[in-house]
Length: 95
Image (tube, rainbow, N blue to C red; front, top):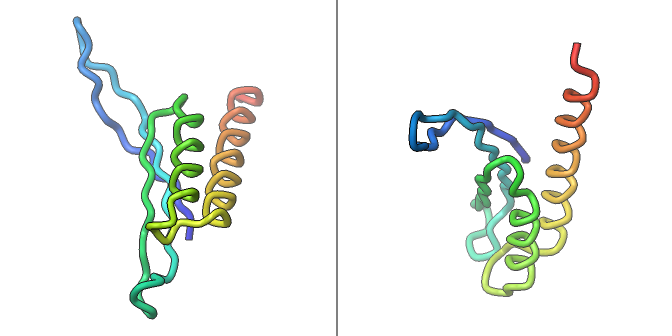
């Protein structure tokens, strides 16, 4: 199950606080260590930092100590790309 959840976070600036959207991608999958139970991988990020998120997917997939594999990285990368395209469409087709 994938899900994107923007929420507001404050970023304190010199003169005033600015509200920015925060993005979230999550992946639920069955646990390798405890069959019948699920694990959640949650990635929260600021818009514009998608490259760092992709790097995190790669690092986790390369690390054999967790249950996050290359298929998971591909699924989340696809979801991230799909969300970016949808956001670009909104900007280009703003009514």
